Amino acid sequence: MFESLSDRLAGVFDGLRGRGALNEADVRTAMREVRVALLEADVALPVARRFIDAVTEKAIGQQVLKSVTPGQQVVKIVHDELVAMLGGEQVSGLDLEAKPPVVIMMVGLQGSGKTTTTAKLGKVIREKYGKKAVMASLDVNRPAAQEQLKVLGEQVDVATLPIIPGQRPTEIATRAMQAARLQAADVLLLDTAGRLHVDQALMDEMKAIASIANPHEVLLVVDSLTGQDAVNVAQSFSGEVDLTGVILTRMDGDARGGAALSMRAVTGKPIKYAGTGEKLDALEAFRPGSVADRILGMGDIVSLVERASQVVQKEDADRMAERMLKGQFDLNDLRAQLRQMQNMGGLGMLAGMLPGMKKAKQAMQQSGMDDRVLLRMDAIIGSMTPKERERPELLNAKRKKRIAAGSGTEVQDVNKLLKMHQEMGRAMKQIKKMGGIKGLGALFGKGGLGAAMPGLGGPGGGDMPDLGKLGKAAGLPPELQDLLKKK
Image 1 (spheres, helix red, strand yellow):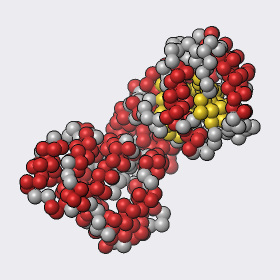
Image 2 (cartoon, rainbow, N blue to C red):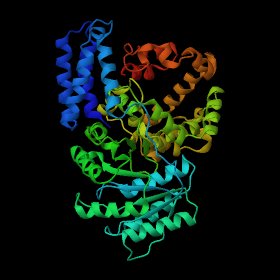
Image 3 (cartoon, rainbow, N blue to C red):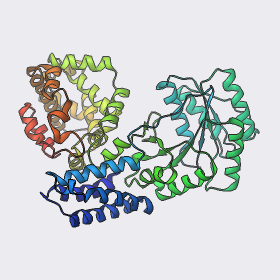
Image 4 (cartoon, rainbow, N blue to C red):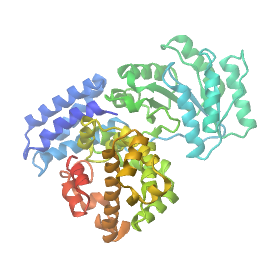
């Protein structure tokens, strides 16, 4: 997400960082380029204008222009203003502090992903908040809308209101309230009907349902890919219904980011969640700081850690680490790690979330490397016998030919996989020599990676350290050192 905006801003800020001193004209020239980048990203004109004015006022101050690293200081100011524009550092989650059942009303246009998002939210409420939820579809216009929510409810293990044909939305809302109370549900999710465009009939229906259900949260679901149209829709709804927050869908496909950057400023309502895929667990809490980091190419470690915690079981991770440090890392373990990478979003997603890996991600794309690499590796390991996976040293030329034929690959692909396995084993031995995981942590100091290397600590720090040299010092294989050099 935000790829095109991020690339444009990277070009502007690389020019600022490369200069030892800046004057007011340099800053104003850079800000004009930033303004064009924001407008090309479909950010609302008044929002872009306010943003540039605020950044320029702070960036032309003597404290910035006379600092040792003025380019970095300007980047930090831009970062801080982006966070402010997106709603501040605080993450706005669901407000469930009310007498149960807490009613959450989902509103939006048809096709914005309301029904799927309702199911995703039900899953979040059950798994992360530990509360019992009931979902009810009030959409009597779209064919099979109620059946769709019922099927999704079964998939996320959240109860749905039984369907009674012929009922009006207000009647369904009344029945849903009664059912939620009888079932002692903590939360009631109402999936309302949408329209192809905002009209009076849609707004009248919203208000009638709201008067019956008295919702504690009214969440507007909008498609971020529609850009400025999404902002216009949000304005229309906020003028008619008392919104409490926004959920942006299809954020994973939004290279521009105009909707996300404009939404908070235009509506005054927080963006609470972002849909990042079609899977029912692809709903992330919207963190303004993390989004600003991604836009400026600083990665998103918080979201990466959260995604890893959802995919990787702690017991499995501990067992894997223990086996690796004992030198027992076989091809079964490698296969498990490859599958975890796929479940976390693949190579591109992971590279995009790691600080300083933006250029490595671009190099991957230019070389044609994508997530099919992971699938090919999995197929190669799947073509081996259980004994061969446990003891890779058994793989002679004859066996490699058989494995390549069975996996639809070449013998050189098999060799690359085996070399990768050997390199990971060697890297683990180096970590063991440095005192294991604890010793590696001590290397980075009590303050974490940012304390040991200020340039890696976030916006405003110095330039990124030479990761290639770091990899060499850690004893990593040459191929991995080369990848780090491309950061």
